[in-house]
Image (cartoon, rainbow, N blue to C red; front, side, top):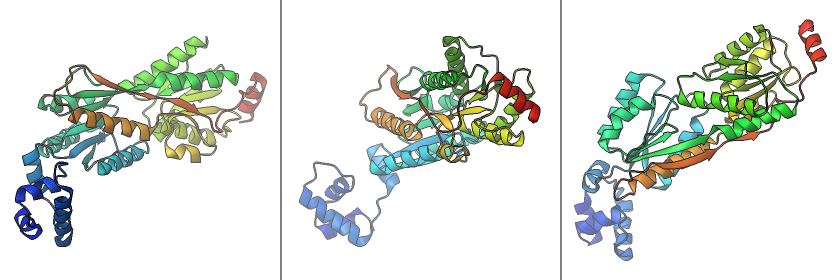
Length: 344
């Protein structure tokens, strides 16, 4: 079955069939309806590779994430795919799992499939990806780290806005010993969150000397709290670089018989869906995964639609904000704190 048979049965030219199937708006509406009736009756599926060769467009977007098992990413993938379907696109999804070789194979696969653009939402390894894609004139969307180059758009995350709200919230609850558990500091996004914490603490005149580097995992959060408890200045509140770390802190607190939030207030970052179902529900800085996916898709559509490349970087901004739940409360007094620790 090919378009010649469709044309014969619909009593139109093959050119009309081609334009109708590709939804060219200049096709007469009645002829298009006739073509689609035959297409539906025969169950015809166009050869997408052939269409890509003719049009120069594959109607495929690449989407690169760090690890699909991380609860931060499924909502991004789902939203991005929904938008792709609505706009007659497919997505080619890959997760790097922080493996450079796997990432290189994935990028090669995208190039072979002639993707129309790639959204790189990995929060790490972007430099290597860039080297493979930037010189092929493939439109790219990055988070925070995109270079000033043609065909490149950047989504800027306002980490400071939400983290400042979190620090001020804890200060209003009379916490003065506020710890921060960062992500791996070789990641630019983790470093940006740490710097936002340092700036926010300086703004309210509190020392920022309780900082532990984590790895954005549950186990990393558990290990970080163990280190903080062993320190000479145990915190009354912990702000974490992501929600998985915060959930790990809550889990470790349970093993130390520390009540959340009576003994220790905890704040996460990301607002993954799981955050509202922890015990207690987690106060967190929201970085909307849905909005991030929408911005990435819109940026790609804008880049693909350009007649000529724009040598000025296109930027999109995502604001973060504090979501109050029940994992924070008024700081325990010094005497209460001593009694609580002695009892344990």
